[in-house]
Every structure is written in C-alpha cells, then in structure tokens.
Image (tube, rainbow, N blue to C red):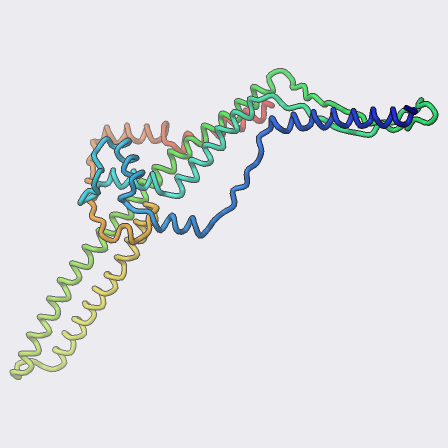
Length: 310
C-alpha cells in the first residue's frame, strides 16, 4: 500500500467518524414538524361548532359541576361564560402563548449545546507523495459565566408568568364583552316590542281619525299628519328589528360560535349586584393590587429588570 492510499484511507476514516458523530448529535435533537394551515378545514370546523358538542359538555361539567347531558332550555350567564372560555379565539391564542412561554422556561434552563465544525487542515511537514490537506474537526463549548443560566431562567419565568396572567386578563375581557353583547341583544328585542306597541297605538289613532274624516268631523290635514306619524313609527320598528341580527352576531363572535348555533338561544341576564360603600372600596383595592392586567405589567417590569442585570 503506497503513501497516497494510506492518506486516502485515513481521510475516509476521519470523514466516517465525523459523519457518525454528526448523525448521533442530530438524532438527539428535536426536529421541526411542519404544520401547514388548512383554511378550508379550519373554517369547516368553526361552522360545525354547536352548544351540544360532547367535549364542550364535559368541559362545562368539569368547571361548573352541573349536569349538561342535555342542553338547558335557558342558559345562565356563568354557563355562557364557560362556553366562551372554551371556544373564543382570543383565549385560544393566549393559551398558546402561555404554552410557548412554558417551553421557553425549559429551554432557558438547559445547557448550551456544543458545536461541531468541519474545516480543512494543512500539514506543512507532509512527506513527499502525501497530500498536505487533511480534515480538521473543531469542538466549540460555550462556557457560561456564573449565574448566567439562572438569570436566563428567571427572565423566562417572568415571561411565563406574564403569559399566564394574559390568559386571565383575556378571560375577564371575554366575560365583559359577553355581558355587554347579551345586554345589547336583550335591549334590541325589548326595543322592538316597545316600538311595535307605539306603532300599533299610532295606527289605531290614524284609523280613528280616518273614521272621523269620513264622518266630516275631522280636517284632512290632521289625518295626513297622523298617517305620517304612524308610518314613522313603523319605520322605527323595522330599524330596531334590523339591530337584532347584528346584536346576535356580536354574541356569536364573543362565544366563538357560528350565528346558526345560537339562533334559538334563550338566556337569562345576570342580576345586578348592589355593593355597600365599604365593599366598593375593597373591590377597588383588589382591582389595583390583583387585577390580571396589573399583574401582567408587574411581570413585564420584573422581566425588564432581570434583562438589565444580565
């Protein structure tokens, strides 16, 4: 075996060892799995959502401790809140961000992986007939200073706490939006009823004036004015009736359901709670100290402080 063959054999052996080391390292790494968006399937899934979903019923039973084997004839506010917590997309986003922040905490606590670099090497003292070029392998280890990993973990934990509080803040925001949407829907229906009663009265008045006009006891000008008022009352009823589908659409958006799923929805509005002056002050203090968005701001402040200390 000549010198060139020996050098070539050594070169191939080195490449094999390096390739094996690379494959061993890669096999221990997490691989990215593509998750392409399927808009058609997502849209179909949203349109298929109902209040009778089995998973939703189990979710309601677990959180409310009540029987939901059949859909209630009338939904109370608390049950509808948990429906919104289950379906609302803003809460889904907040939960996903919290899960990502939790994964960030685990990543921050891990040690930095070494890097393997394959570079060409040159042997200036190579014998005649032997190639001076040879493979060279560099292993780079990142030596972290004292406390650096702990600070990185602390920063990630503050970010995770901020994301957790964001979930709570999003839940309270959804709760408030649902209350307003339900009140608007109830008011829209009540407004139609009131305006319809007024329109009926105006129409009866116009009919009476028509009879008096026929008897010669009423001027035509006054009858025409009464007819105009009656027509305006009917137009007001029609305008109010057009607000009901819009209000129902808003309720569906907050619940995260298609409008068809709540077409026959019957609900009871939450009763207003009267608080004593002392209770109002206590609630105000609790809001300033423990409200979710305030805790989010505090967690972000602590994260900024930790980042400046690094």
